Length: 438
Image 1 (cartoon, rainbow, N blue to C red):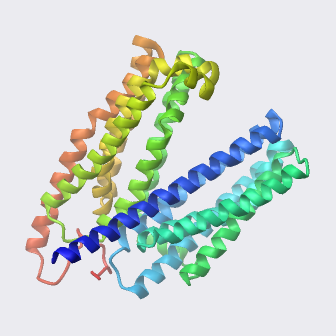
Image 2: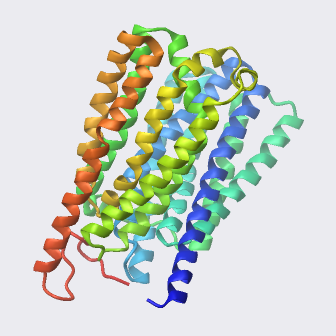
Image 3: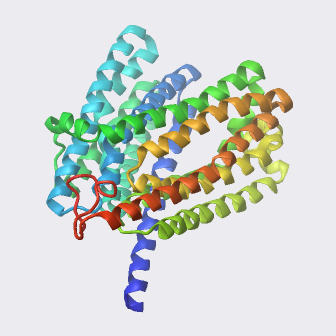
């Protein structure tokens, strides 16, 4: 490759990475701003109803990405344009089908519960397909190396949402349901924009075919997402059960302080998986270098932000978190240590995802899940909230060498299979059936 070509390629890569970060920032800041606005506009019960609706959305996003979006990003980044468009339609159709199915379930729950919570859930049930479709289009644009369109879709959602919410505030609305509707309708309109910019419509009728074709991946992805999230949330519940609510609040507060680097890690996953999945000819050494480089960049960023947080004056901490700051400051060092280890693992995780080995990712995350619960509770018993934070950190660091050993092993397997394959005929272990290089 000529030097000019290399610089041009690096520039395009950096540009896509930058747009990924911008998109994740727009998405996260929009949700944070909405939560803060609603919290100030309604009473505690109404905000609880809104929060429950948002929790339903968060769980639905986990399921949708596992069943619809992640297979798209892992298997269709190096295919012909017609095949990519067909996959985009099937993936977004699958997301819409999930929204309809979960929406029906949420509708029944809303009717049973009644009251403010029931009304909010009824609104969410109707709007869930559009919200999930909006996120699915973001993932399609990431897979297509057009993250600027994902940022555009999120920016439009944020603007429409702010306009609608402002109108509600001016009107003096104090109920959660109108805010849920404003949020959901804005997301649905942004999903329409995504379909228009992609020039592709969701293929709802193909959702069954999509599910069958990618069940070898999605069965691991769904279990992994639910297991990992459930393990951490379960560990926090156990901290609250065996410790105090103050302990839980301290650990949550540390998460808030370290949130900006979590956003960076999310951006790295959205950027790294499709970029690595389309590079099917990488050697074992190149994969290991990619895992090390990405993990090192993220862990250094996490360490630097952690140092800033640890040096934060107490007056500033109290201004941010009020009376909770004293507990947060006690667990912050251990939380920073754990975050650095977790960020170091993002690099190899991206590589393994990019190879299409969801089964290997599931095994590592299953081990992390068990250790989060066991080490967290043991740490709580030995040293309170600070001990629990150290237990979480120990779990994250324990699997760092496992991640890199997994990358090395899978890389050697891919090299061997490539050498054994017939020339010009990609191995099915490297590319799923039906994929071709660009």
